[in-house]
Amino acid sequence: MKNILKATLVIVFCAVMSVGFSQVNAKLGYIDSNELLEMMPGKDSIQKVLQDYGKTLETQLQTMYAEYQTKVQDYQANSATMSDIIRQTKEKELADLETRIQTFQQQADTDLQEKQVQLLQPLLDKAKNAINAVAKENGYTYIFDVGTGAFLYYETGDNILPKVKAKLGLK
Image (cartoon, rainbow, N blue to C red; front, side, top):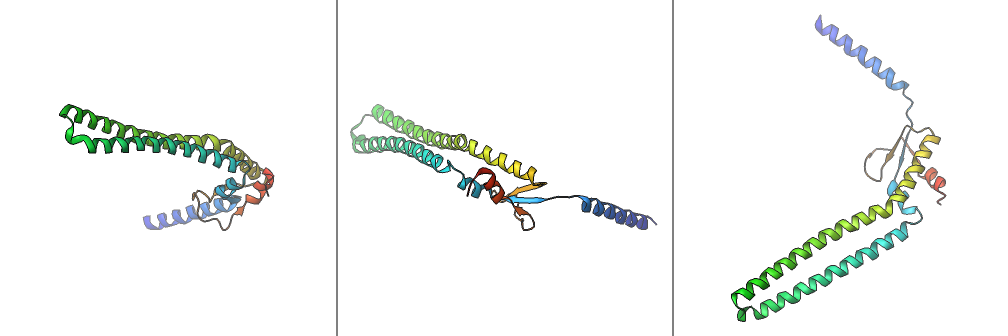
């Protein structure tokens, strides 16, 4: 008797859920935000600024590394004639310089990432606003970003990239 009651409840639950889901009027769309971002005006100038900034940091890092190499070569060439106190001082100096180089490299990577976020944020905001406007104007319930891999199956949705491009005045 319990099994029949459980089976009946499961069937009723499934029927109610299927009716509920069939009444949902979901309109799905997708967009490749990476593709959109590549098309937007200003992206090339941002890339140029980031490349120039990266080159500046790289030049500074190379200068520090060249100084390190020079000091290592000097130490290796003269270590046999150095007193213990001078050798220890030189070794500490080399270790400190190596630490500064590593710290600079880590900070340079962080700075470059922060600069990228700072420069791209206006473009990202503009794209997001256009996507939201297109979604509202066209009655979309969900828009999936296939450029980030957040949703991999999108065959039944509508690609809204052409509408967002039109909204932004892109060709």
